[in-house]
Length: 229
Image (spheres, rainbow, N blue to C red):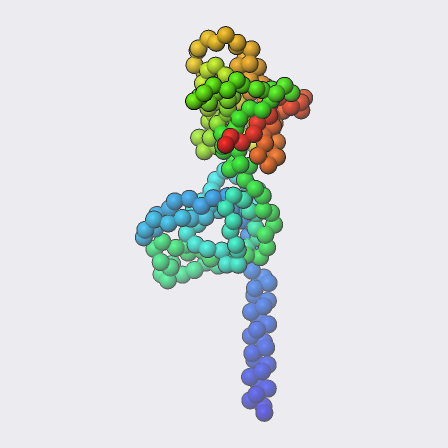
């Protein structure tokens, strides 16, 4: 009987120590990027991009492992609280991380605006006026804007010329710069001019389903788009 009681209290004390140890393990804030990237270990694989930081920066690091208890959904940027454990490098495979993370809680899960913006958009209106281009057989003459959020470049067609340029993006702020274009002259240059001026005056944007809206410094809508089919 004494042996059983000794065993019971010993097990209870050990479990209590473990719980206290877990509670004292410091928590770390971890950001997880919206898509996995190609990485190389023993062979080709896909890695999470992470950063240990209290605030999100542009400095991502590849993570050759999994986060215990965390379910990853591409297209979202996560801010999570984790506990981490340093593993013995001698026991870790060559293509694995020597740090193991354990999820405590998901603090934020936000859709990555860059992935939503990265499309071809057809112009619907300029300064509140609907844009209706005449249909030409076997030709696509819609006014378009192609946004490349990887290279941070734009391409498009203004109704007369093809154009290109760069842009800067921060939250819902967007500005276009270094815009250039081919130099064809068309019978009606008013529409291309209005389009280019609106792009240059764009300061903010809003996304609603398959629609994109640009606003000027006065928060007036100056361009609206729909996702190209």
